[in-house]
Length: 264
Image (cartoon, rainbow, N blue to C red; front, side):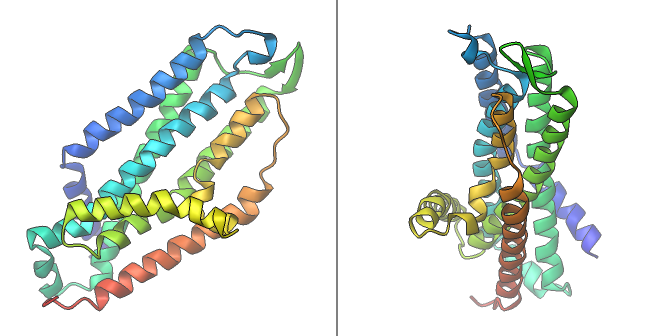
């Protein structure tokens, strides 16, 4: 049942037109930023851009815009069912609501991961066609070998895919409180914009999953600059915070929809 529901939700999501235009815009912004960085002549030897640095900065830009796209699509996934009136059909069907919610969440997660991986792969190709991949060399000294570069790039990709999971749950959860897609999108984006600053102001930045979304590619960018870097904060703080946030937000969504009255 869950597999079939997920397939239907994925088809519903992929047959909408607006996400594709937004994806194109995100990738165009990322590519333009990366090409500008690669084609700008360095003023000094310290300004020379390396492949990992170009990739980290470019994908970081792409991720920031991709997050907005995921939140928009997620917030509309359930709110649109309310606005079209199709939600009542699902609520009265002999389908367990948690399966229906799980199918929507799974479809959105797959959609989000496809966006992230597309951004990542595009970044890899742009670097390969411009600055190229290889050792990180500064002033004639090899600071990081090609093998170390690829190990860290792959780790960054894996962590980024994990860090995006609670974003999907947040979008669906906020959207479930609105019967208007426009209102759902507006509130979701506004909430996202204030989440980071408020968490930092309260001294809770490291406990907010929004803190870690682009941190993995930032580490690769730092490595590309020849600077020392560490993964400890992401592995021992970012991973648990993101997983717990995903479970809590997903559970909240399931409970909310399970208690939803058809007359509401």
